View 1 (cartoon, rainbow, N blue to C red):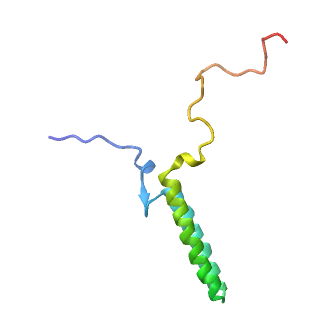
View 2 (spheres, rainbow, N blue to C red; view 1 turned 90 degrees about the vertical axis):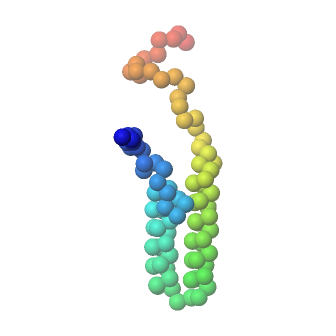
Length: 94
């Protein structure tokens, strides 16, 4: 009988419309905001502008999802990993 391994980190790789869950939630908030703008706006130019802004946001978010190293400023792992407590005392001489 074949056995399968339990995969616990499935949410890390979940993708909806090419976006991760957090980026998809950001896109949905932007769409809800744009729908409010469309409802309370009576300008055809504003409606076209909202669609263009949403399309641009979607392309930016998909590029961020495909290349996450763009916004990574610091190193992922620290130089030294230690269990010692950090105290405020300095033992070196001045």
